[in-house]
Image (cartoon, rainbow, N blue to C red; front, side, top):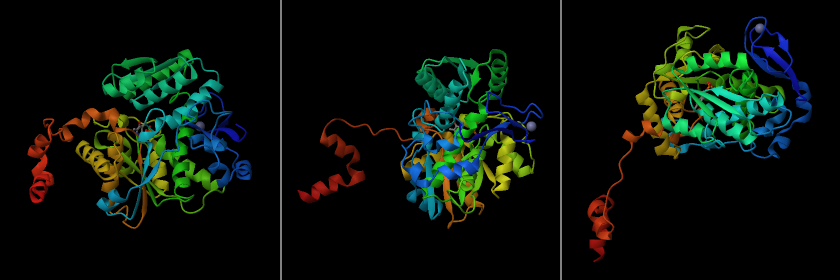
Length: 419
Ligand SMILES: *Cc1c(COP(=O)(O)O)cnc(C)c1O
Ligand SMILES: [Zn+2]
């Protein structure tokens, strides 16, 4: 915490010590961690960062903890040059930032939870928990298990079975609340208040959000310490997108990368798109909606940081796109077919939105683009079963194979020619 200056209100600029505070006493605005950039500039270098293990903690001077306690293998996920997908989309330079293989729970949430869980221990919380649309529950439960912390995760009662399993396996208390994510969040705020438990995305939110910056740090480092022209990020509660921006800006402020910051575009499913609607209507604060989409990770109708997303999108000269469930599923398949990456529906949302932005001429073919894939397809496999071909059934003999598949692959013809 050598370099942490404190917490600053995002709205009115009031400052606070870096404790378990999350809203401004003056104006109820969200608090965010601020750093002594001049001091950091004096100690960090590209070489120092590159010499460290490949985890999000390689940027530790820009993260608000004393000493990393978990997430020692989280982050530093692949940035994949996607040439086949690029050709399909008509782009020259396209990358997938692939958090579908993040450690240990296969989503971007391992970034935010690594920081929140470490800080929860440092601040002395006895119970660690969260309000979740699924991925967060799994990540909170896994990191709590590693730290030996009692854990409560709260989820809406209509979650995919794989996501419930993905949390339950770590043996936290899983509480399914009758209602949607926004109801869950409201309840958890009351519990945090009354019982003093540490909720990753509520009273530890200022620290949680800092973890999301690492996605931005890594994109720039993995591009050879430069910025792309465009980044497309999914939006649920609105943590990730503004923190990618904050991360990139900090890299510039501490002298590690120079040049123009990218346009950071927002992607949401049409069935839960309060932020896109606000961008399109020119509103500063998104109006809450009632979510209805297969992309359940993104089904937040009243995003806590929605206004920050709107602000960053505007500030970077970017925009956003909302896409139908059908387009989302198509994009999941497209990514799998062209690049061998199986993303969850949230990833399909981001790629489908990228397609829409290309179609609209917002992203041009000669510009470099990074698409953020934030979760793994196996967690939302149920929405894909109808879309993939059934296995071809055959008997166990070579003749069975040739009878059923021979005409397709020319085996029969080749064998006849040899005979
Ligand atoms: C949580 C999550 C997001 C983004 O959420 P924010 O709350 O906007 O940071 C995106 N994709 C997946 C798969 C997620 O689990
Ligand atoms: Zn304030």
